[in-house]
Image (cartoon, rainbow, N blue to C red; front, top):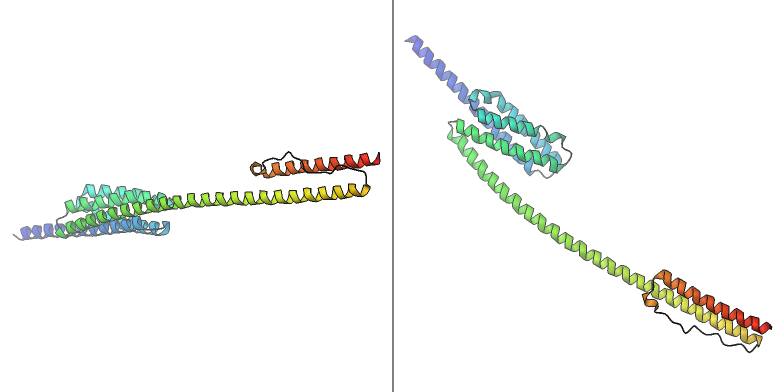
Length: 252
C-alpha cells in the first residue's frame, strides 16, 4: 500500500512539473509574439531590431521547457520563428527587416495557437483569442494606413506636376522678356548708328544718300536668343558697309 501511494505521489509530481513547464513555455511564447508584434509596428529600423531581438530571447527561453510539453507543432513553429528572427539584425533597411519580422510574427502566432491546443488551461486559450483579435485589428489598421499613404503620394505627385508646370511657365516668361530687352537694345544701337553715319556724311558735304534701316524686316518674336544676335549683327554689318561705301564715293 505504501508503494502504491508513493507511485501515485511520483506521478502527480511529474504531471505537475510538466504542466508548470508548459505554462512557462506558453508564457514565453506569448511574450515572444508580443515583442515581434511590437517590432512589426516599429517606425524605424533600430526599434524594429531591438524588439525582434527581445522576441528571439523569449523564444529561446520557451524552448528550454517546450520540449517537455509534448507539443511538437508548437516547437516546430517556434524554431521557424527563430530562424527568420536571426536574420533581422543583418538587414540593412527597415523594409528588409520588416519582411522577416512579418514572417516571424506569423510563426510566433501559430506557435501560441499550437501550444494552446496542447495545453489544458482555459486562460491560455483566452490569451490566443485576444491576440488573434488584436492582430486582426492591427491588419485593418495597417490597411487603412496604407490607403492613407497612397492618397498622400497621389496628392504629392499632383503637386509636383503643378510646380513643374509653373516653373516652365515662369522660365518661358523670363526668356520672352530677355528676348524683348535684347531687341530693344539692338534697335537703339541701330538707330544711333544711322544717326551718327548720316550726320558724319552730311558734314562731308558730298551729296550722299541717306542711310536708312533695311526694309527686310523679320518676325523676331519667333527667333531664339542666338538667332536674334545673328540677325541684328548682320543688320549692323549692312549699315556699316553702306556707310563706308558713301565715304568712299565722297573721296572720289
